Length: 314
Image (cartoon, rainbow, N blue to C red; front, side, top):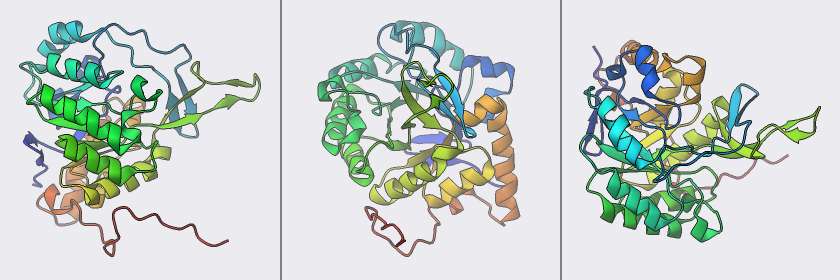
């Protein structure tokens, strides 16, 4: 039997598989035993009520997905009263994903969700910061560091910083998050993209643009996970296009300690426990006794973590 247990900072997970925020809800308890996966990650919440973006909010693109949900939320009060008690019946750690428009709003919400039953807080610093003309906190190292410092002061719980692929400074942003107090990095959120209906000549999303997720995002997220694992000394949680055990193993070899599964759950709601089973079989077939033996085992010729690879000559 292969030991699938991993440590994400002080948080011990029975296996490295968990959902990506926004792709997991209490209703999945009707599909599989929620204690079969490593952690529960809630849909991102905001302090107050939020309606979300105009419809249509989702469209399919070349085997992947675009979404512009807009983080609809019932608010922090509903979350603490209704959602946290539901997950307290399980042994699996609960990670709450939060979002805010300003650093102070983020910190206030972080403090409010620091309650019994919550084991870690995933801070979605990929969301727009209205104090920076709508640019995501995690676009720049400076804004990343500032918001993480405020969040660190607001809670004693482990903080997971969810980064964005919409930046050209991935290693620098990762280090800023670590220096600001992040205990782990979630790498990464969706990448900004667009689709147009050629018959109507209208964008396929009501909000014009949205986030690309699914298999198309995987090579980008994998590159980021590799960079972040090399640039920091905190665990990296890979996220982006993970659909099977082979994808998981690729992220682990690149340096991720755990992974999040998102779009694949919309295709097969029971995909996460299947991946857990398949991952154990895959590791056993390779002669491994522990999943920890493969983490960061990529053979990479010791490239600099901030290296920018030149395009091949035409």
